[in-house]
Image 1 (cartoon, rainbow, N blue to C red):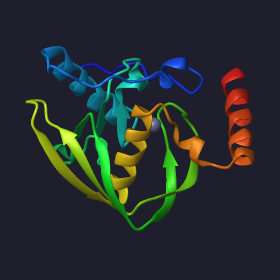
Image 2 (image 1 turned 60 degrees about the vertical axis):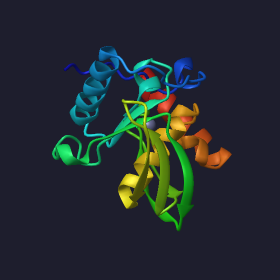
Image 3 (image 1 turned 180 degrees about the vertical axis):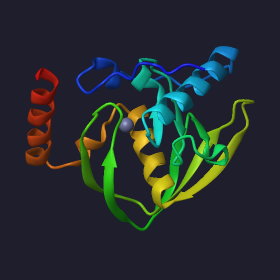
Length: 167
Ligand SMILES: [Zn+2]
């Protein structure tokens, strides 16, 4: 396993179109292991393949940041099929290091997800895991969490972020 370099806000690969995962390969097993390792190393709750520069519809979620193997979820070509309620809480992104914002997300989501063997499964998540699912699925649509903010707030963050990168 290896920690991969996470690309950051402004890199065009975060906005590229991501293609569906088709055949499952040993390289994808390796990529998933590396993505979990990278998530844990930065105390994140998940990571999407485009964040390591690979434009496919694959993401990992681990709300325990490496502490509990039972929390690991691999999302492959995932789609939200239903959502319920709402939660308001702080959210951050490994591609926008050092920034968090309060964001509204559904309290509960249901997801159609492909397994490595090609079968489909339905996953249900609430609270922090539901937030992480929504955040990672956004990445697979080329969307960052700051895009959920209003334009004024987003501009302020963008300016602060660019200044921080320069300093
Ligand atoms: Zn993110």
